[in-house]
Length: 380
Length: 199
Image (tube, rainbow over all chains, first blue to last red; front, side):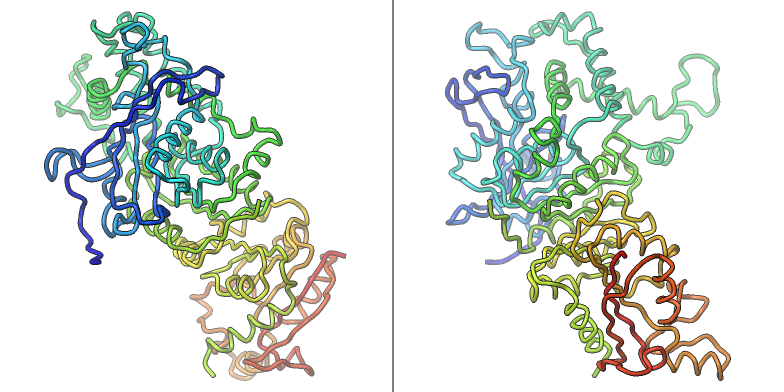
């Protein structure tokens, strides 16, 4: 077999639908019919032991790698990390990536049609948690005939799901990679999510979530995204990228048409986001992040992590102020205390929370070393 | 015999202090050679700490657990006596506050293994005492103005420090190249390896 180093070419999204009541939600409710959009890269080996599940962050989708439609078009969100010869090497691994429950990129979410009413769910969609997202992925993984994942990997909200995988399904996870994430949002994190939701609620077009077929709450969602985007960057990266430069003018005109570059960038990001993301998904997924709290397990965070048997790699990024390094350490120290196989590094990077989507080379070396290293699982 | 062999000799000597199946924290673990040896030969549950990203990569590649951290910050997040052995191998002389770190180590570890170059070693004495220059040799390969080593001490200095910190010396191996030194350790040993514990 040749181990060529080249990019994945065009990939196809796939769908699978699970029957009513396949999924029991953490709230105790059962879920109706559930469709999951996913992509796979590489080949599943004969003993089905080389599967890696990638878990996307808050606004991500199933399209992690390769191109859509034609080469060069719409590369996946982790294009540089996934492919032949890359950190997640598709010559070696079978990579699975799915859109999360409650999302709006092909997996059932608030914008999907409720079979009971024949209308989009809107706020009739049940409240979901990180655990529910993980259980949805578990349905997919088992549907693909895989009883044990070689690894689960993700950043930010994806990292929360990786943690839940390791804690809730220890027998299914060999290695866990958690990037720029946390075991629980801090008050600051909760606050930013609340502001995002309030921006959407305050848009008159939101109409308590019942806007499908009418005017979308574009302004509310756009402002939510702008706030989010600020938290994904850093003071340093914004200074480097924009400084105090004006967008269209050389000098101040002393009127409100003076726009700084950063202003124009945020407007652009907000507008772009509105085209691809659903406001109700924003509400549901941000709430799912809020609820996530590993310390709520019996025995607290140590009790939760004590259930795990996998090897862990945690990475944080020096300029990430949304999920700061101390939050990764709050996971690593208890893991070390209870004797888990865990490695941790803080990458010095100027890109803020977004670093895990940008620091391909350095995190790539750490990740591929971690994937290749031997690990004997804890005896339970 | 080359330097590599001398190093592996001193690692094997350090390994003799460490009990099988124990919990080991290796501070300044570098590429993880010592931890790997202890894992393979003693079956320890080992963990390394290093500040350099390249060292973290090297350790992860060996399948070792490793934590990127700065020893100057101490071990504040490590509970008392949470490791059977805390090791500081060839790192003491690079630390800004070695006394603070030693206290932290005996707090966190039931026992502590420290390995450091003896500045009182004969050749050093000759280079400084007779030659009148700071020693530069196989043991201390850096010029004074360009060295990571900021806190050299002699064997006797270190013993005095331990006494003042309330640290007991449980065992000692004095080494030069691949030989153990029995007599005149202060002068003839270039490496001192000690097993310590809190009194």
